Amino acid sequence: MSTIEDLRSRVRAADHLRATGARQLRSVAADAARLGLGLRESARALGRSHPEIKRLRTSVAAQDHSGAPRRWMTARTTVEAVQEELSAGDELMAFKMVVQGCDHLARLDNPDDVEEWAVTPMPIPDARYDTLLRALTARTMRAKKLPVPTWARDIAPLTPPWLVLGLEHRRERTVAATPEDLAALGIWVTENDLVTL
Image 1 (tube, one colour):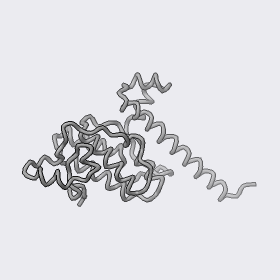
Image 2 (tube, rainbow, N blue to C red):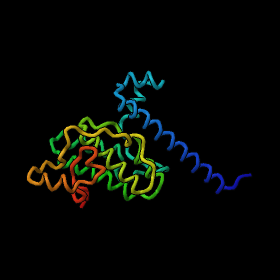
Image 3 (cartoon, one colour):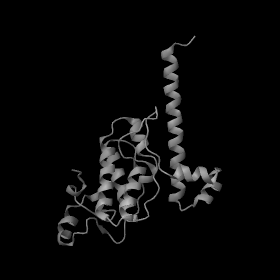
Image 4 (cartoon, rainbow, N blue to C red):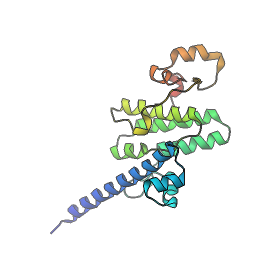
């Protein structure tokens, strides 16, 4: 006969498996979009329905295993915030949303939270911000000594390079102070610019 604590432990394990499976499905749907597959092509290729692929590509609020909302940004909600700011024409705020999202990642210490953060997001249509999110995700995961998510690896450099904040009067200083990993990707920004206040 099982004890109540044993049953609770089994329920927690089942909840973890369900959450992991949901993350994997959302990642696969977004990976298909990053490969350039539309909804119908993705549905056909993945053996899923068109409505399911659409649902999997749409960000959902991050939740813990009990269904309570989490109060931090994920890669997916970061993408949504960036797209909202770009639609409003505010590139500076879009940049700040990427930095804030990665700042949230840096502060996470629960492995389940980190896994939720790292679920593959839809690509940001503006390659500059998509590259920035991928690059900052990779550097944050490396700093945490965790594996870099597949979607944040093998990043193509931007051409031409991007002076992130667009401040031409400080171009030389910014280029000289850009961290090597970001400079290699054609992203010119200083460490000070990557700090949230």
